[in-house]
Image 1 (cartoon, one colour):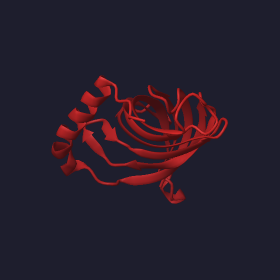
Image 2: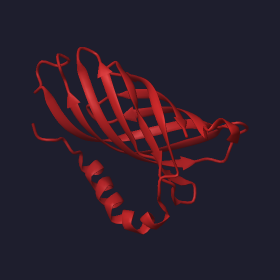
Image 3: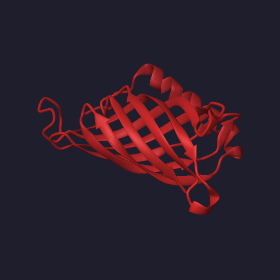
Length: 166
């Protein structure tokens, strides 16, 4: 089956590819971590990895993730999410952020939808919002996070994820 690429998502991806060389001089893996949570429509358990690649501009952090999801009648997915987070000024003990990006996902529908082919590839916009709790230096952990993702494609409608960065 042919991938579905909404026109705004394609333009956003093209803009990101053009801007990437200018921002690349400031990027590098600052921290990495694990994340896990639950998804809705389809109902899934989600686990994966996140990477903090640093700021592309003041307060704009690039933090891609690779997620694996399973559940809901055999529906499974593997997705690469590439969001940009705007980090708001800290509010007491936590740091809120919001942003969005694109997700590239391989979807295996299993028995979830018998009208479709068994698998598909999807590129879709995703809105992201959450907050982080910085941790003490003696723990070996840098921060904990709680995040809500709202997807615009076939992979999921919403996810709540908990993460830890090392």
